[in-house]
Image 1 (cartoon, chains in turn yellow, purple, cyan):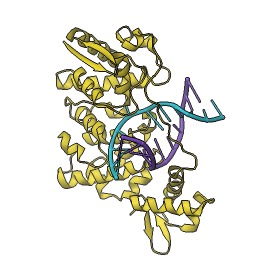
Image 2: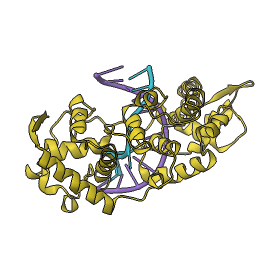
Image 3: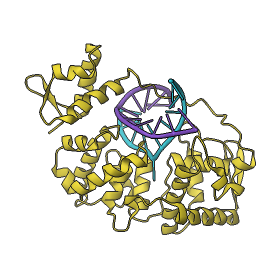
Length: 307
DNA sequence: AAACCGTGGTG
DNA sequence: TCACCAAGGTT
């Protein structure tokens, strides 16, 4: 039997316990899993790819309409690659972290160049795409191609921290032990593993939530190490929270919001409205956006989304 | 490896 | 109300 030590707690991962976990979570998912558009039959690997990038740090509820719009307008990688990066940024609307739109556009171009216009199946090929890290590569391998890949997102981390390790929350940053544990929990069969991955994510998203977990409806409450320990409070290192007001992120966001509204270039004077108080700061942010490729500087001190 | 990168909902 | 949080990635 496998025994894994994680953050102090040693948890029994016997085949019997594992089989029970799998059965409970998968049965729950069949009943309670959401009918998200990209989970429907017939969704292309490209559709899955787009959904995964959009879902990076953005709640699924806000992703749904954007995903519909994107996949309708750009049903294949070549369609997006043939359009301008600025259109990708405009269609991104207010999903946040607009560099993801740019990287999605770059990834589409890379698929056309290197992969015959298809989403690559190989994990290393996926990882080589811009905007694709360990999570997204594994998620696409699992959900688009039915492969056995270790998918570790914030939901998986939290569920496994509780059920297996007995702690309220995972560490502030992903540590190796968590990936090792996630792999140990994966069913052997490719298709089962892929389903297990979505099911655990869904459990974390709907039941085993960060703030107010609904342990009373959890299918594995009686097996949960955290539950059995009396739901002790989080004890790890402090989780630092991002500030927002007055940060470059806020200023950049306002500038981009202005540019998304029009197809006509804006003058520097018009852009000043985004952040009137601090000209130097505003100019630095605008320069940063140009540097990042989110904004194009045109002759005559004008600016627009990149053509 | 800590900090940065948006935006909106919520307990 | 206001931290906290959300299917992370990059530098």
